[in-house]
Amino acid sequence: MTVSIRQVHPVFVGEVSGVDLREPLDRDEVAAIEAGMDRYAVLVFHDQNISDEQQIAFTRNFGQIEDSTGGNVTKPHEKRLNPLMNDVSNLGQDNQPLAREDRRRLFNLGNQLWHSDSSFRAIPAKYSLLSGRVVVARGGNTEFADMRAAWDALDDETRQTAEDLVCEHSLIYSRGLLGFTEFSAEERAMFTPVRQRLVRTHPVSGRRSLYLASHAGTIVGWPMPEARAFLRDLNEHATQPQFVYVHKWRQYDLVMWDNRQTMHRVRRFDEREIRDMRRTTVAGDAPTVEEMRAA
Ligand SMILES: [Fe+2]
Image 1 (cartoon, helix red, strand yellow):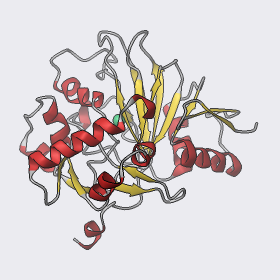
Image 2: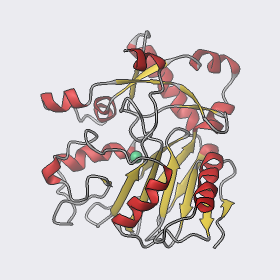
Image 3: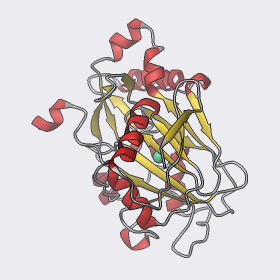
């Protein structure tokens, strides 16, 4: 089979055909998908009825799998899936929807805010791969924003202001936006803010992009309200409709995105329905901020 990719949005996103994710890929297929990621930043694969093991094997073509520890309030003994998988479902270990007041559900509602996966880690994620095992009939779309296109469309003055800024990212900031503010001492320590550059350069294409996320709560050296107002402005700019692709899930879709070049969010759905979504994450290879290495 030959991998082919068709662009499905004016500025990014490719739909991939000619690949069966249940089977091992050869080097040319992996290279074609990587080139597609560099160019389109989001790739959609339809009709991929895969197991967790097949998803993990496919993910390993693109680098090391990120350890999911430390990114959630779900305790290790409460996990439904293999530790190499991030459970982005609305389900408990009994495979039934979590209760409305369940703390894990309330924490996961943060996924409805625009973000880039693992920007709260010192070495943030490269790719995410999300497999729709059971999708809901209405709602639950995932939206993606092209942060390269957002950068390209900024005026020179704002670009100059943003250029060398460093933000602090933490799950405490993003959850705080929804009024989720109660954390144990252990969680507070786990969610200690990390520093990320506000503007990134893609290692292959050389394109610049805004590195935003709801996790970004302040800018180093700026007064807090000024930092938040500026970040809010940039977020508003970056998520205008012309930069956004709306993915309406079909069962067995797999969507793969580059967290260095995009943001995403999930939209509301009826949480009494089962939505079983499983994510694997390719780890990044370095901090975005030089000082992190010196520290
Ligand atoms: Fe996410």
